[in-house]
Length: 305
Image (cartoon, rainbow, N blue to C red):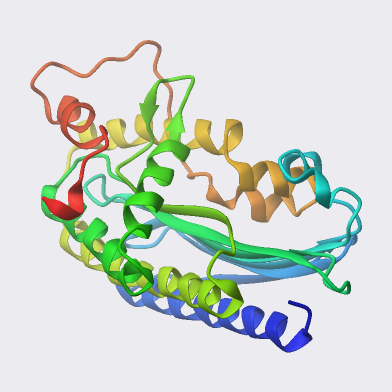
């Protein structure tokens, strides 16, 4: 793969995806609007970060597009692909994190990206990556089944093996090793993906990106007006701490962005506006909070439920 039109096609899709997601989230919120922040990166490239804050439904939502480049890969990327060390590279992506105000509405994350090294050579190295995952605070079986069935349907045109493979990858990736617990109920995750050739691999990326809104928006619509008390709010803030821990300790994209000299404000837009930590907190036996740990966080075949 070396022709410029293919790179521009990826960029065009990602910018349109950012527009579509921001428009849908504004419509679901009904009050707040996204602020747009265009930026350039001195080392190469730039992006368009959009942030919605203090909405009626969404306490914070960030949807960022970036297209960055460099002359040599940072350690987080070249460590597992040593053959790329020293090669010029480009990375395109849309990344988003949504933190609803209501504790019964789950946090969600999605990312779709494309990476290429040595684009001006006869044998460039490229791959796609991404996925989406759901982090509920109070679980509902119907939401989990809808989320995973939508993910399964998005991958179905590309074969029966990809959904179980990408689901397991997601379960394994979004696992807090230092806590020995999952971050949420998973979804899809894939990286270094080029096995279908460029056109089909790009089609798979689009299928995943286009499935996010049908997967997430109906869940928010069902839960955004659920009555809640300070108890549920405090548990939401406590569980948001797990989200912060994962992003700062384990997330490969965060490490890549920071080590490659990326824009810190855009990289850390994923962090929630409010969060809390409590020493050695444990849910009361039989409580709704305990049910999250016992029923929803352990990996489960939700699409087959």
